[in-house]
Length: 220
Image (cartoon, rainbow, N blue to C red; front, side, top):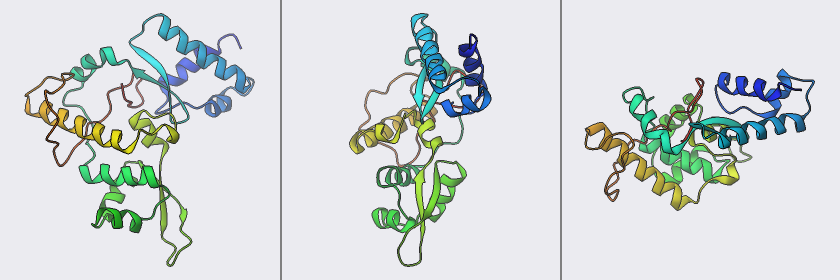
């Protein structure tokens, strides 16, 4: 189809999250998978060749328009005071356990953390960061939890196999939490890196930088 790239571009801006090939095929059934993938590739190359302020990146098994890192500081300045509620340190810890050991039960996570995690799981379910995937074949048949597509979109991760090493994940959370705390205190401006991240706070981590569409957020 001649206008396939334009159609996909419109769908990208209207999508609330990562746009998957299967979603496009539902909207435009007369085009095959190869045609859709070629259109995505055409758009990605066009944005790269024309130095747009956003790029087309693979996220959560689909594609999403994300702010480019070199212009992200200006986007952050515009969004100061408009960020969504941040995930607590406890929520991030539970999310990390689920991400790297899924599927897991609440009991598995509580054994690792040593504290009750019921409230945290409710928060993560409400934020659509995790989802229930059946029950364990153990006594009591407890619920099994796995990460959701929204988790991948939130952190800008293409697939679960692309998760960073645990050490890298912990370092990222610590660094971002410190940066946000300093921004909130006014010690640094949005986009400016702190001089040191040695002392990480107990709570908080930033939401990802804004994407270049109206439907969601992503990591710049």
